[in-house]
Length: 331
Image (cartoon, rainbow, N blue to C red; front, side):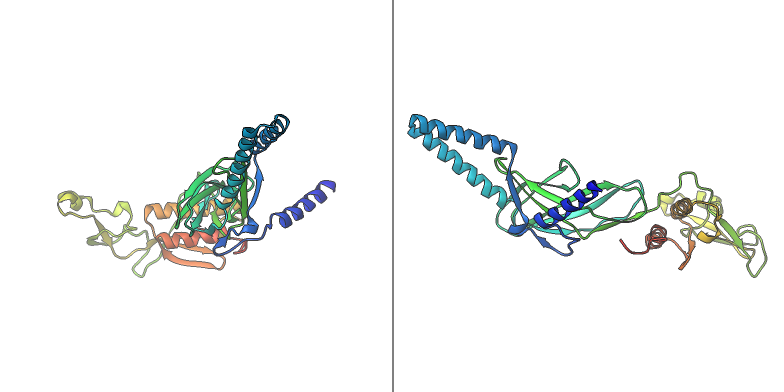
């Protein structure tokens, strides 16, 4: 009870003190009120040294000692100002985040835009939960730089970007300036493809001319190869006659009559006793296998009824349906 209360009070205090907000869409400006600055360990040691110099100069009435103390103090004040200016008035914008499979690294693309005439150096950026920032970059005047932050994924669905912390100690390291940002970005995490999935669920469908598997009835001739044609239908004798390097091309045997094999990935046709996540994982594997073999495939899962097709758009639509099954499009 006490730990929960302490966490709640600390969260409220951090939100008020550091002006933490929800997801910030569009371009965000690091205004003066969003940049915080404090002395570093080296800075505290430097101030202690200044105090010793000042006390020694007063005790021994050293004119040069006073001069050295004030010059060093002026340098510290200048460093404080430059450290603050190195971070203030930067503009931040979230970029694209490509979908990944569960277990892979999710990458968030973040843009740092500098529209001022001041070059920015040694800006460290990482998720706020990270103890030590992992990425440092420079942003030249009137340009922008891109930072790609990664984090592991464990489960399917939408993965929102954690809060980001930007910090800098440039130029002398006596002060540390930092700011927080909550990007309006998220990554779609697909189910992890099953490692040892069964073969693709090919099935035959009756045609008007008879029954049986396509490729075993009424040979109708040779035609040009089309993506998705089974490898066993390739006309190897005709292909061997002309080297593809000299203008030859792949051709396949064409059949009429019988039945054609079709590939339909039907989620409801899978055994009900299987774990939900395992069924989703198997469907993901079948989608990838069908794409790899160039086989057009239909997809059925609840309200998602996709006709037989192939390609990046079809693959993405199927995997998206699997990733958001039972979750919807919410965060």
